[in-house]
Image: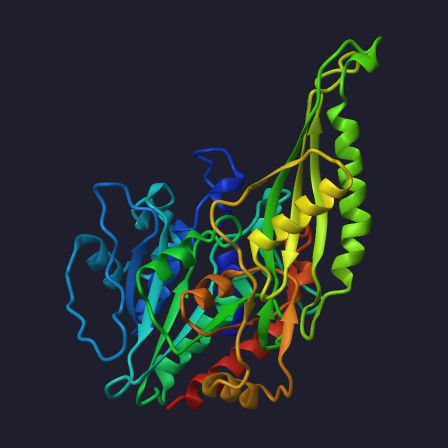
Length: 426
């Protein structure tokens, strides 16, 4: 097996399910084991390693991050940082998880591993895959399997394959060189992409700057410069309860919501299909959940639906909500709209003409930019001022599936391409 294949298998065997999807205290929840294991891998390759606390308690402080290029960095030795910079051996970690100090119960942390250039840095490149996964259908998905030229297991495609390719390429560069003379390269293993993106949001909030971020997602080895946003809305109708033997005395909120659903899935969806983006196609709407009423013999007084509206660059939540409300008013439908997500998940589009993006395209042999329908951390970083593209091995069609897999040749191709690009940096 190659280095990237070995690393991917070890990552699959370390569950890192997003805690939002599991009961409190579930041993499979959290990115802790993966973050600490990767810290040891990176440190043994000679990379400088930090952990950034993402959601610190009042008694905790956020670990320092590299400052913008051109500013001096003041090192602060702390107990947590020292433990990472002098990690237990990989053999220890593979044999006994107790070699790491209970990371699953600790505060969630981004892993920051840095390869410093030979001279003073004038450019900074960020490699940014996420460490969390969705839940497994059974624990067998945490046992990596090989077959038919594939590696199977939870996270193989989304996105531990990208983690393995990116960190393997960076470690090979650190060990074998030649390292870039004036470009600092940072690997950031981010937490919580599958839920609230608190990892990328914490990195952005730390005023971290880079000239380009390559965000790891299964793009089929295409460099993606645009993706859709994800706007989750909660729509509610109110009625009047009555005994079901006299429904004429009430007002059925479910019936009114049924008209709303038909309007969204038909007329509104047709309208969206007429708005097109050159890389992303058209915007979409999906009614994903509905809840209303209490029992058959009561006219329901309330009904609620959850809507996923995939947005295009240039669309704003305020205008989308106003458009929907105007449509409902024309049909005399009484609807209220609220936002379901705590933080915006905006569409992303990066200029393919930027120098580092053009260079990445040349190395990859890709002629035209590409777009994807899904949302990812690239949006958060992009809207924080870091030009971002999305790239990684695997196919999004395999993500979140019961038999998640990645082709071994795709993993190796991604590793080789990334290493070639890193070696091309000034």
